[in-house]
Image 1 (tube, rainbow, N blue to C red):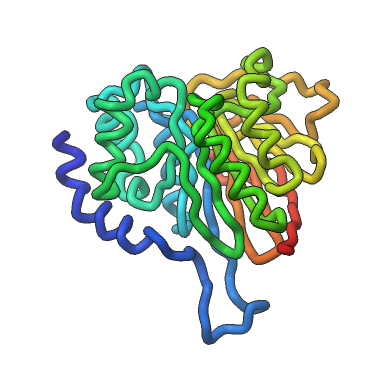
Image 2: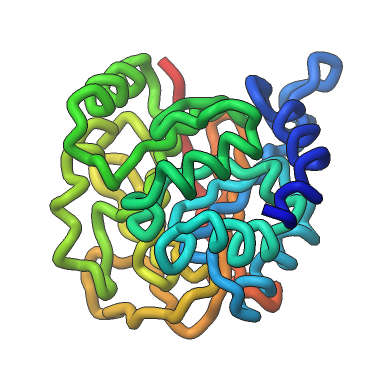
Length: 283
């Protein structure tokens, strides 16, 4: 874990600054209307040593975001060596501002890879599902690799029942996809149903492309899985799809403000590919 030792001091400082706080421009002195948004990026399937993953990481680093939602997968099996070489070496200091969710590639070996890595970064073991606040939104990280876990589902339903829909749920596997993993959609139906209508946004990866779906009962799903691994074709004729891109590597940039999220799929070279806005309200 040589690379991790070199990064430890920087990561721990960054983690301490983020943990338990709202990110972005929240300020007691500034008027709410003047406060800048909290800027987050959602990246999936980028745990690889390839040049594309490094380009996506460089794109995000230039933006100096408040946080990053890492949507899972460190290739091929999420071993400690792969977390060091394919992940920490690619993202560098960005790791300290990441909030992850487990992917299918690291889940089977989580005890030696995922768990130890994030404990190293955070200084404490990171739970497989958790909540935090940013920019007037609640962010819910849930574990799609254990989608039938009754305790997780009960926790998620409790979070969703708290009122309003200013929530963003993120997980590795998407509820809907017009890509390679279309036959897996039902595996996470319970997680989707728990927040449908009470989370304005659901963000996933797993399919190696970029997708935005039409709203379903007030919930909009995005797939941001073009972080660096080989890309998968999108069926652009899928009637559920509002936007699909399978030629570019990239990630999803999210600006969070109370009552509003502005989202942009951005290619690794900085080209905006799709812009959208989702609004929400609190009871």
